[in-house]
Image 1 (cartoon, helix red, strand yellow):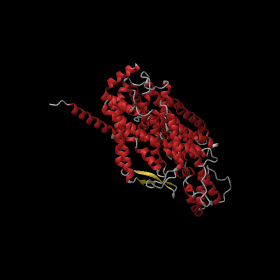
Image 2 (cartoon, one colour):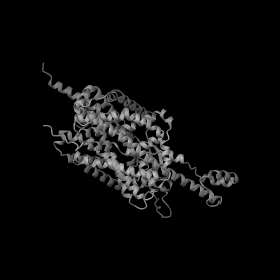
Image 3 (tube, one colour):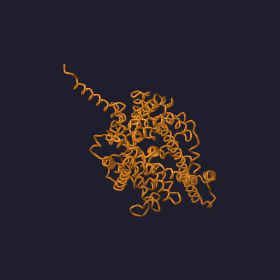
Image 4 (cartoon, rainbow, N blue to C red):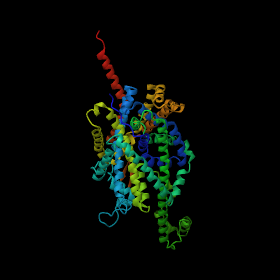
Length: 592
């Protein structure tokens, strides 16, 4: 007798789990960056189109497969064809890679959260140098927020070759992050189902509070105007469309096996089509909503920096030319500069090198994504707000909830196939399996707390999943439509949910979505080939800025292994099953 499969307490719990998983840090720190890079409001055109032709159909496909097969990724694809077991294995491997480094972000969020209760905030002022005669040289050359991130948080080494030792403070935060994840997944759907109510809803509460605060900040409108002003010429830029497709793809968490795992705990009669539409629309709406919040704060930061720059120039000219206090203002600055340059050319030429070129547009054009946006740009804006400790606590608490929600999905993608396997679950209870997975991930994750850990984090972030996920989802789509059979899958869905599959889903699954994924694969492969030597951004303490360096040979070898480890699962497992079946046939062949 097959043991009864655990179920979600109600359909809402499942939807919350999917939203908590899909709505993650990418919505907050990747989507606003893409808007900034590819035409502001006009980027929404390719984004919405890609949501319709790629996001919704592929999300529905994964939910339908999980709900129909009622197994984790390995079991689900093995049921469709034993030769496809490698697709599930590849998903588990990618999810394992993701879990190794993703929880480090939660560790950093814990670190910043603990420091948010200090007054003043530790990233708002430069520390004194060793002689206590002035400020730290590295901090003065960089900025206070960069210094706190690169020196105090990461204690970053000058290159990836200089590994350094494990930093005990980030290491303790990483242990705490994994302990929290373990407690959330301890009882499977019983515990995860309760946690997702918080991890899915609390970030929205914080975003709404931040929206109200952001819109009241001085200069917020500058950021919003910048975001919503469409640059229509970007619609002709193929990179805008490619990035829109990629953002939809990764934001929904396709290919990891998490959505299949979540859907496998659904009632077979659940309306997974409705769930797919709801989750994809909420995910995309959150990205746009988070961008409004981000750009209002971005506008405040840019305006603050622009006005600080103007005030420094005004003070410099007022002191250099003995002007009357209050005479020089932002409105007459350019006019007075022209007059001083013509009336006092020699003195003005001496002062000229110290006069900064202040530009609001260039401040707004400074595009930052990822950890740079979360831990440098946002913290720079927060330190200039009133009651900055409160806004800092709220912000890093939100990051923690977003990161934790995604981690619950990542670990479900690993644990569900393991607990489904009788070979594993027969010998080990669920709590032990969960504990071992967390412990292994924690042990490997310690690499990211070393002085060169940030560079390895970037390698995993850039190369562990991109190509692998595209290949996994391409094989998934082809498997359902052409191996299992689209008509057969359609009749299964109708028998399961009582609803027929309309032409839109069939057209997307059978043709449009696979062609789009193939296009993305070709783009990424050609981009890697044309790039030549892969490079990374290293922190130069003497200059107080990032410099570009080539990856050493051992780092390139790790990149190759990361890509190969997951992608090669698909053909290697298929080959292994083929060889085993041939050997079995040979063993059972009648003796002549």
